[in-house]
Structure formats: structure tokens, C-alpha cells
Image (cartoon, rainbow, N blue to C red; front, side, top):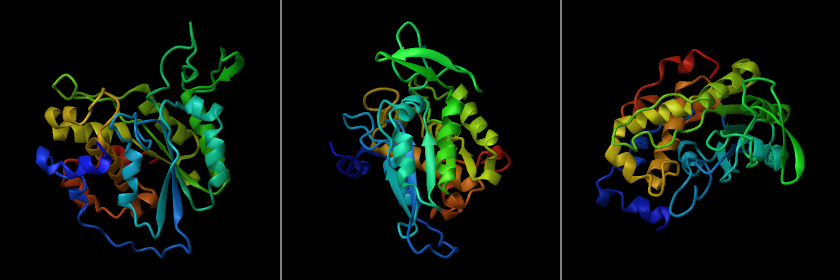
Length: 292
């Protein structure tokens, strides 16, 4: 079933259309650039076009609806099965950096494929465990590799984009389905902390680096929607979302932006009030007080 057909069938399934909470827009008050800025997305299947396949979709495909296309155009470079490490090794951050222009924004969000162990077999995705400059030595596909930590990969990528004149959002990953057991329950993972840490260590907002606690906002909206709705929209497993839930994940990211302090958040055409009054819930209290 196509994503468009799935969205058209939502009323028949008794689900509110995910764009309905976005009906009221705020006019942008800042003058438009001569050309639209690009919002570049770097991530895994939870963000990517086509998600994890088999009727799933990534949330990055819905981000454009929250921005005036005359001012911002979303370019989704996320690809399934990647971690911060493999995205780096495959040159995908480099490829995005080649396209970045001054005034652009880059959103980086990984975590689903970054855990695990380097031994006894390295899958090419696992990061070195740790929050700092720790390194691990491994052999992957017959090639010796020095593996960095998740925050180190985040910071390395972000610095590439900062050097090109872009601003960067280092986002925490979306959680897996927190309602899979029939009760919605969530707690932060180490990657939620690592994403914030990388943003803070790069200098935070003063350096043009921001953080969205996407996992926390995603968990908030899933809890508000309830287990029945959430479970119905994870069609194949507990990681990959159907179109409806992918758009919900996009909305939770947008709320995190809107509640934060970045100029990109101020450019969102959904008002904070319209988001907070929907299933997305309120701004998280620390969202405007830490480097976000």
C-alpha cells in the first residue's frame, strides 16, 4: 500500500489525520532569503524515505510540511541500516557536507544501530562504548578500523557542517515502540544523553549547535495516543513506523524545535499552541533552558 493511500484511509480506520493538528499556521516574521535554505537530514531508516521497507516510512519525509517551502527545503539523506559510525565510514556525512551552503541547517539523528558489541563479530555499525575520546580497534570487511564513540562521531560530523557555515541540530533518536506490551512506558537511553552531550561540548547555541530531545517528545505523544493507536501503526516490528506514526514522529521533532531556542524552531509554521493542544503534549520543561 502506498504512503498516500495509507494516509487517505486513516479516517476509515478511526484515526485522526496526522496533519489535522497543523491546520493553524503562523506567518513568518523574518524576511525571506533570496533562495531557500536547505534542511539536510542525516539518519537511519526511522528517518529515511521508505523507512525499513514493507509499507513503513521514515519521519523525515513529513518534515517539509512544517516549513514554508519558499524559505526552507528539506533534503533527506537518511538511509536504512546506518549508524553514526557507518554513515561516517561510507562517506555519507562528507557527501552531505559537499552540498551544504552557508545558512543551511543539518539534522543528525542516529542511535537505533549504534549499540551492540564489536566482538566476536563486528557488524560495521557498532560504536565504541563511551561518552568521550575512547577508541576501539577492530577489523571490518578485512580492513583495520579505529572506532570512535557515538558523541565523537556526532561532533566530528557537526564540525564539518559548521565549517561550511551551517547550523546543526544534534537530535536524540526516536524510541522503539514504547507501547508494545499494551502499556506505554519509556526511559531515556544512553544515546539520548550522548546527543545532548555532543551539542553541549561543541559549544551549544553560541556555536550554532542545538539539541532536540526527540526521544522524550516521541514518548510523550505515543503515551497520549495510547497503545491501540500506536501498535496499529508499527506494522512489521517495534522499530519501523507506518506512514501515520512516521508523521507523528515528525510532529514530535517539530514540537521539540518549536519549544527550543533555534531560529529554525522559530521558522516552524505550526504554532506552539496548536502543537501543545494536540496529542503531542506540552513543551518539556528543560527544552529551553539547556543548550537546545
